[in-house]
Image (cartoon, rainbow, N blue to C red):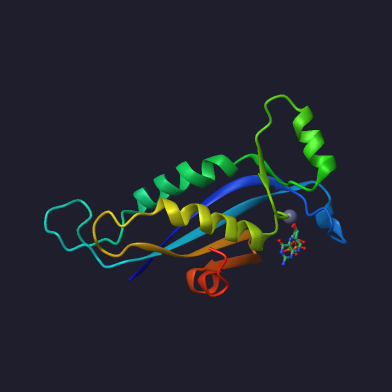
Length: 155
Ligand SMILES: Nc1nc2c(c(=O)[nH]1)N=C([C@H](O)[C@H](O)COP(=O)(O)OP(=O)(O)OP(=O)(O)O)CN2
Ligand SMILES: [Zn+2]
């Protein structure tokens, strides 16, 4: 069984080497859809009976390890020296430094790696992260899936 929880957050970024408008500082209302697989919990009487994981727990974990850190942050490539220096000049600015440019693809992969360690099979129902879908705009998104990531040995 697969379940999916969607969360949204706002962040700034730029793609410094882009040949068009995306090299300018700008922001997005990002959305992230987290898909987990697992067996339905059948233990009678417990709060999670009939669920793979409580959606509120899916949200709580994602918020703690990822979304609260990226929300209203500037997502910057560590090699983007001009913007790195600018952000460091600002007092107490919320900045997330990435070792790759903050494209939808790279953000989906980074999110998958962070979330994969956070979702634990605490009910013995084989819970695991299967996919992170990262929307940069309502029309553009990237999928980081377990099969593709393991196939490329980049998990
Ligand atoms: N494969 C990728 N292509 C682009 C990415 C990306 O992350 N992966 N990112 C960008 C820019 O960040 C840009 O903000 C988004 O580009 P674009 O789709 O052109 O955005 P619009 O606001 O014009 O979207 P509309 O739906 O056309 O309004 C570029 N490419
Ligand atoms: Zn953008």
